[in-house]
Length: 238
Image (cartoon, rainbow, N blue to C red; front, top):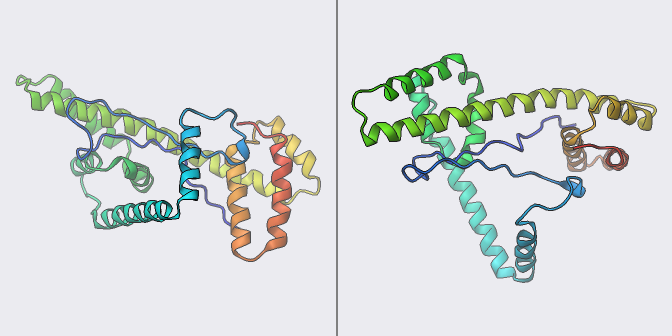
């Protein structure tokens, strides 16, 4: 059964030199996934997305065009990802992240997390300190300070979120095994509720295992896990 969990609430950061106008602050967005409507009331834009989906379902040509555009964008990002060379030095790594498109930040942070260490952030702070106390306070210097401050804040928040997600993933794997191996599912779920461990991470991991079981033609296993999922939804907290 699959045991991986995607970093679904990354911190995509619009700081790329390709996308950010001068002197415009970065924006941080997080897109959640809500199977079965367990996260409560819809957020703004939810109705608009549903209406867009209905229009696509009715218009086959529009749907095909949209799917083609989505695939073209995926291909473009894949080629861009494959063409990039991971830098060797901290200085080059800073520029690498500054030149990373917003939608690729999640992937790059996951891939380069070991490089985002104390030495990296110390280098950022040192360069910022030199620029702020520079005798020549030009527009280019101000722009560089803004870029680095934005990058520093974004990466600190993103690495913290990534590390938290990894810790939750380990716990979710352990708890999922407890549930799947339990002879008393209800009692185990209640134990997890008492430990505040019955959460969205565990549900997402279970969903991935269900999908994997169906893909592997393990229908009975998938149906058994779906029953567990139904029981889990009665107690889950988010």
